[in-house]
Amino acid sequence: MRVIAGSAKSMPLKTSPGLETRPTTDRIKETLFNMLQPYLCQSRFLDLFAGSGGIGIEALSRGADFCAFIEKNRKAAAVIGENLAFTRLSDRAALYNRDVFAALSLLEGEEPFDCVFMDPPYGQGLEKQVLEVLKDADYITEDTLIVVEASLETGFDYLKEYGFTVVKEKKYKTNMHIFIKKGMEAAW
Image 1 (cartoon, one colour):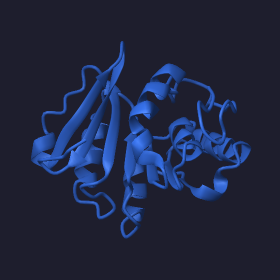
Image 2 (tube, helix red, strand yellow):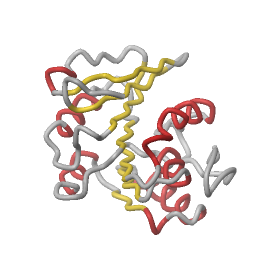
Image 3 (cartoon, one colour):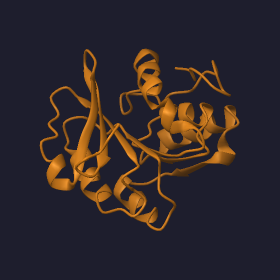
Image 4 (cartoon, helix red, strand yellow):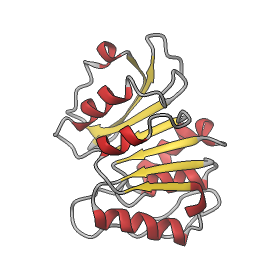
């Protein structure tokens, strides 16, 4: 795994050993960031279920001013710290080594995030639970773009009820990215 573009371009990133994290492949990451690029310059980025930190580090490398990483697994969080130090991006990051719901409550009162990325474990309904928290969070505005990486089988039929709109959907062979904004008339 490596950083694809920006200030840390081509730098290799460590990954957590074992099967507890599923790093996003370079090809999918490149496709994702081609779509996210307009949102990154001087942005505040939030990487939930951050794994090895590859997505948030890519955002920082491509121009985000700040990224908050949330990862519960202690070993994976240590890898994020090592990757941030290696890419010299630590000074623009905050790492929360705790449960995503505990960390999200700590973010109340923070400046709004421009982009939120989440890649929760598949098949546990965690994306729905997180979106239920985000719908009322003061750091999520109608301008915030939320991207959920999920299995192709994951349903999002509850989004309207939560006040979210799907603005874009990108399907791959084994998973998909759903781009969501707050409000019923969200424009991409």
